[in-house]
Each structure stands twice: as structure tokens, then as C-alpha cells.
Amino acid sequence: MSVFDLNNLDLLGTVLSFGLTLIVFSFIFGDNLLFRFAIHVFVGVAAGYAAVMTWYNVLLPEIAVPIIGGSQAERFFALLALVLSTLLFMKAFPRLSGWGSPVVAYLVGVGAATVIGGAVLGTLFPQVLASINLFDFPGSFGNSSPVWVQISNAVVILVGTISALIFFHFGARNRHDRHPERAAWISAVARIGQIFIAITFGVLFAGVYIASMTAFVERMTFSANFILLFFQL
Amino acid sequence: MRQLRTSIVVAIAVITGIIVLVGYFIELPVLENLRIILLHYAVIFIAVALIVGVVNLVQVHWKKFQNRQPGGVYSLILIISLLVTIIVVGYFGPTSTPSLWIFSNIQIPVASSLIAVLTVVLTYTGVRLLKRGLNLFSLLFMATVLIVILGTVSFQGFRIPGLSELRTWITQVPAVGGARGILLGVALGTIATGMRILMGSDRPYGR
Image 1 (cartoon, rainbow over the protein chains, first blue to last red):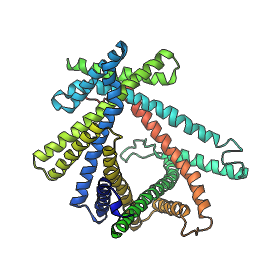
Image 2: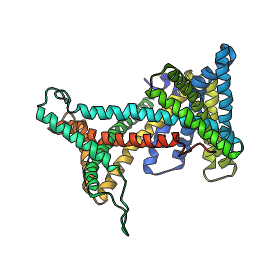
Image 3: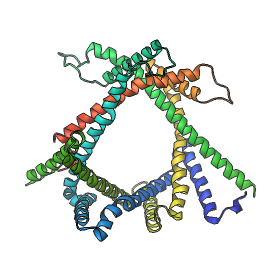
Image 4: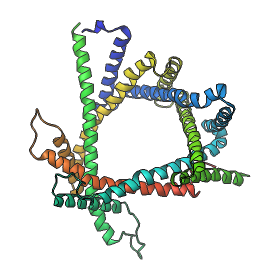
């Protein structure tokens, strides 16, 4: 296949894609005009795309369509949403932004409650249950491992969980004419927690590194294929 | 008058928040329905808030261009690319060929190239960490990174014996312990912050 097999739009797209890849890669040698150009185009396109997707997926079916062709009740709910959305839209204009505060308060209240519900039901309970289940033998680490291995692994995880959690306890006693300090035992446990946190961040870093390396290989393969295609002219 | 308005705004946040929160934990059909309606409206308002954000983006960059501030030309480029995208995607539809052309040939290449550049940035960060004075924690961090990476990839089929098993143990035992501690800490912090909002102590919504 050569570049002439592609239609004009595809060819333009491939050239644009290759050019943008090179421009972004030029950041490796430092910030430059072309990189800034590409980033601003990227942000503009992303924001525009997000705005249109929001219109098509939420505002059109939830407000516009019910107002035009919905039942009486649907029309009422959509009109109420339209009025409140207009108030919220006033946040974009500094002089009128005060009108949007009640809707922002509504969003913050609902958002805070949703986040609390999510944290309790989605993180706190499942994580505590998972920590308890570690000692539900056999089965925590598969039936193939000996029980002593399962017990030691469960103890390591439990120690890691508790010590990492204690690391984030920053309460300190106010001591006369000296800097406030954490209690000695909390400091000691927090240092163990720091070890576990360092290992966790190491694993996360390695995960991100491998993911970015995959993207790097994909972009390099694309660029190499493009150059090969071009020299087959 | 201003105090009354502030009280009304705080009351809206507290009442809606409490209704939604109680709806999560108490199984009452009325509460459940009310929670669904409130969340439904919240989704619409979040969408409007996104549009407000885009309008604000245009306003900020237009001002920057108008006042001939440094980088003003880039602001104009941003506004043009945003408007062109809105016109093309809005007119033809998000799944049309022109919209997908923009997505495939501008969005995806720049996004994946930025992720690819992250490889270099992360390598540089790792080297800088090694150059600085090493302590127990940075040493553990770097050792974990190396073990996980070397235990994941193979060099033309060759793997260092035992490294894969060590990687599995690290990711499934100590890393899980640390991550669980961090997650619980984040959850407790989130609950505390959320409760402050529901009690009206924190008011991040203006007057």
C-alpha cells in the first residue's frame, strides 16, 4: 500500500496526526512554540467536543425534547430545569453570578452527599470487609498456598493498612515552649506506614510507566509506518 | 437581606444533601424516589456547569488575546479550534465522519503522544530521585519500581528467575496493604469534608 491508496481526507488526517505526534514529542527537548500551538489546539478541540457531547447527551434529551414534545408533567420538570439552568448559566457573567449561587449550593449539597455515600458504601465498608476476610482461611490467597503463608500475608496486609492509615494522622499535642509533635508511638507506626506507602507508590509509578511506555511504542510504530509508507512512493 | 439570602443558599445545600444522604442508607420508597429526582436534576446542572466552564474558557482567552498579553496568539488559536469543533461536531453530529476525523486525527494523536512523552518525564524524574540523597523510602520506592517493571517485561523471552513471583507478591501483599490504608484515609477525609458541607461549616458556593 502507498500513500496514494488513501483518499485525500485520510491522507490529510494521517499527515496531521504524524505532524502533531512529532510536535508533541519535540517537548522532550524543551518547551517550544509548536508544542504550545498543538496544546492549545488540543484544549480547544477537547473543550468544544465536550460541550457538544453535553448538549447531545444531556441537555437535548433532558430539557429540549421534553419541553417540545413531552407530557404535562415532563414539560413542568423540564421547564423547572431550564429556569434553574439559566440561573446557573449566569455564573459565567461576574455581574450576575450571584443568581447562580442557589443552584451551585444545590449541586454542592447533592455532590457532598453522593461523595459521602460513595465513600462509606464504596470504599469504607468494602475495604474493611476485605481486611477482615483476609483471615477467613482457606481461600484468601488461593487454596494452593500453605496456611502459614496465608496467615503471614494477611498479617503483612493488615499491618500495612493500619500503619499507612496512621501515617495520615497529623494530630499533635501542644507542648509547652516546644514545637507540637505527634505521640511517640504514632510516629513509630507512621514510619512503618511510610514503608508501605513507598512500596504502593512504587507499584503505581511502575504501572503508569508501563502504560506510558505502551503509548510510546504505539506512537513510534505509527510514525515508523508513516515514514515507511511515504518512502514507498 | 443579604443574610437571609445566605441562609437560604446554605439551607438549599444542607437540605438537598441530607435528603440524598439519608436516601442512601434508609430504604424508604419516598426517599428513594426523591433522591433519584434530585440526582437527575444534579446531572442536568453538572452538564450546564460544564458549558459555563467552556464559556469561561473562551472569555478568559478572548481577554488575553484582546489585551495583547504574552501568549495571546495561542489563546486565539484555542478559541478558533474550539469554535470550529463546536460548529463541525454540532452540525454533523458527534458520531459523523467529520467529527470522528477530528477526534481520530487531532484528539487521539495529541493525547496518546502526551502519554508517550510521560515515559521520558518519568524516567527523568526517576534519575533525579537517584541523584538526590537517597533515604530508606526513596530506595524502597525505586527498588519496587525496578522489580515491578523488570518482573512484568521480558527481554526477548528471557526473564530473571524469581522476579516475576517477587513482583506478584509485592503487588498483592505490601502494596495492597499500603493502598488500602491510603484508600481508607481518603474515604475518611472525604466523609469529614462532606459532613462539614452538610453541616454548613464549609460553604464553597458563594453568597
